[in-house]
Length: 225
Image 1 (tube, rainbow, N blue to C red):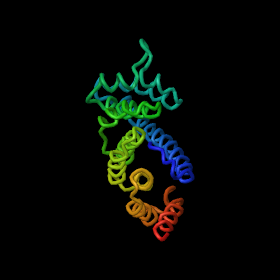
Image 2 (cartoon, one colour):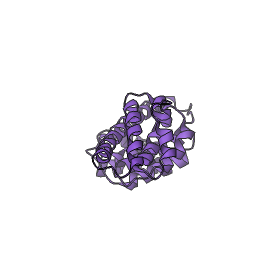
Image 3 (tube, rainbow, N blue to C red):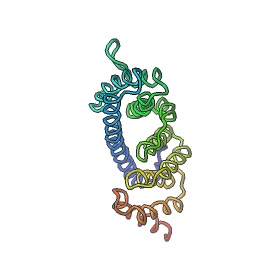
Image 4 (spheres, rainbow, N blue to C red):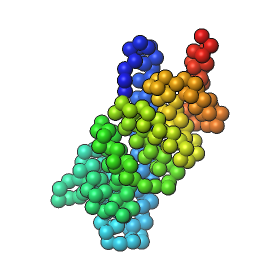
């Protein structure tokens, strides 16, 4: 993201908030994916759809365990002769549920490893109607573009993620990220203020809703000065 040396105080606070939001996002995504995998694993073991699904699920289960332990490179690439990682599962089992969710996992691995460009095609390939995982994949695309210095695309994905499903987890999270991009990256404080106020009005009991008042007060004070 571009440095804003003309506003060192604001930039310092902004970096701290962005770091916290990103790490919070990673924890939430990991938890949500683990829940999805647990349900899928049970389904395939108790009522497998095909041998291919079971094989893919077994590799996915092992890679997912490593992902939960932050062994991201091994989870992504697997261990030759032992099990396939997310990248191979995504490539070799296209059309299966395991292959699809491996796309999301592979994208998150690259994102957390700082390989933002590599994360994009995996996150774009992931398909889900899930009201949590779908928006999180879209929001993660926003994170990738933000880190690549493309705030316009980041904003577009954050808006899409916020609008994909209205809930207390993903909607205020990505409304806040969209507002931060508008305020600090695109210099559109009025639009940012509208999003902050929407968070306060519609998602007051979310984590973002409980802390958004400072952002509203800051922008309202700036508008009056």
